[in-house]
Length: 105
Image 1 (cartoon, rainbow, N blue to C red):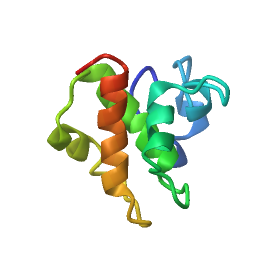
Image 2 (image 1 turned 90 degrees about the vertical axis):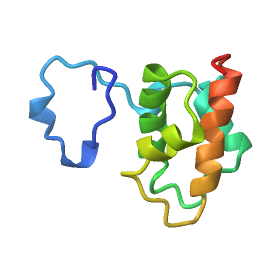
Image 3 (image 1 turned 45 degrees about the vertical axis):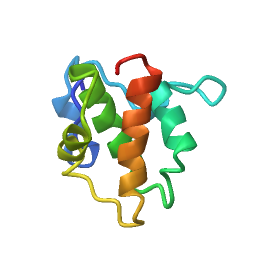
Image 4 (image 1 turned 135 degrees about the vertical axis):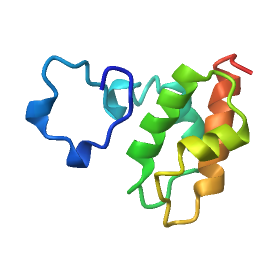
């Protein structure tokens, strides 16, 4: 919402007003994925898919705010999201890969 990742599951639709909303579908397409989406695919960072939308959107917020994050930055930014499948390390690698692919590191 307005460039900040929010928890859509607890945000009432009526509270959005005229905010600009971007969802994971708005980042890229199947034919032309956003570098962050491509990095998640390349790192095989998805298993069940439960956490991925939130992880990707929070990672995008991080990369927009800090184009050259460290591993510690990524882990801190994603600390509020849980990956129960055990791909958290791949998710961190995907965010760092996306930063490099976007020419940010």
